[in-house]
Amino acid sequence: MSKMFTQIASDAFKNIPRGAGMILNKFDPAKPAKPQDTDILYATTGGITASCVATYTDDGEDIDNVPNNTKELKSLTGWDCKMSFTAVTMTAPGVKLAIGPATVAGEKITPKDVLELSDFTDQIWWVGDMGENGLAAICLKNVLSSGGFSLKTVKNGKGQITVELQGHVSLQNATECPMEFYVDQEVAA
Image (cartoon, rainbow, N blue to C red; front, side, top):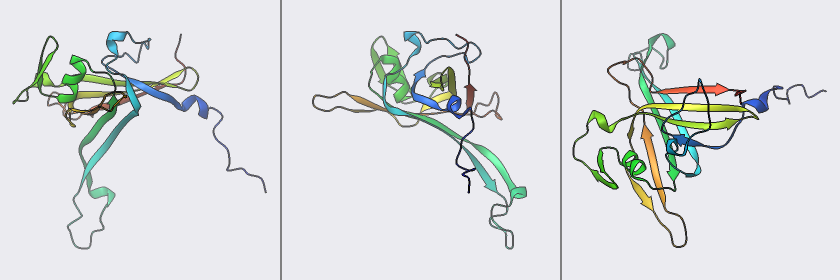
């Protein structure tokens, strides 16, 4: 018997993300270019996790004789979109982003007691290599920290900042998911 179900697509290796990628404050997927140092928000360790989970309401779940998860009775109620990672660099903009509502005056970052629209960051990007010459990118929109600031140091080691960022829907476009995805098998050099 031949092993006809033990293969992968011939172009599969062009579609495999490679390496941890990087967290950027700006990126243009229509014109990919090597990031400038000022665009790189953090050096990271342990990789980056991005998630985008739809939330639903099941109008039939509490009605007798209607099976749960009936497709005609489900509706999309929102999105829970996040990026999380461990940073090993500590800059004023990076600390402010990890905290969320804070003010920055020079190199001083002060958490504040009120959330303002200016505390949201328009976009944060994860961009990574894919295959031999491709890229994968994820844009998180209307970003605010959902994990707060947490620094861990160890003797003879690197300090690590745990960062969890959440995307938010905006009233300016309430139907737009706060995360977008891009894949390109062949980026022009």
